[in-house]
Image (tube, rainbow, N blue to C red; front, side):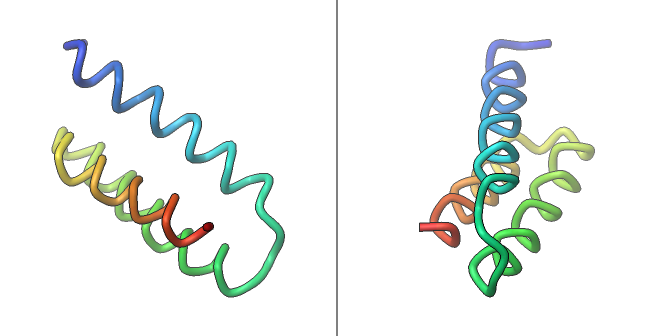
Length: 62
């Protein structure tokens, strides 16, 4: 794993934890769509897209 991939994996873990703790509701539902897109991008080894979607998750939960 490259340092960028490691950083992305750590970010996915922390964002997932934040999503898990979030109360149910429209914000969490919107964040889930972005998290699923991040997982798909991560599977495709697209770090830039993964990070963009993870940032969108964080923003949706705010």
